[in-house]
Image (tube, rainbow, N blue to C red; front, side, top):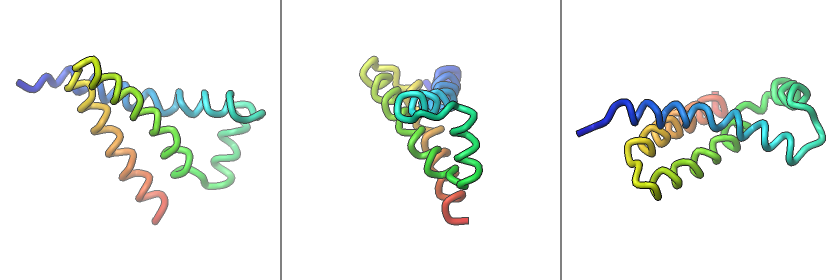
Length: 94
């Protein structure tokens, strides 16, 4: 039986993790503040690049959920990751 609450919770994690990953990438790998980094993304029109790099963190939680045998949570993360991939393709080529 499909557990919709688990899938929605996994989707919530899939939405929550990429912005957190972006903040971590900025704090660890650059000397910029978060506000300055966001300004650079907006000014450089780098939405698809930043979104695709941030979505890599979804692979980590997807893997963790699979190892913990939380299949429905992993499905939710996978659904959001596929959605993010479509958004990246649309923003990159349109």
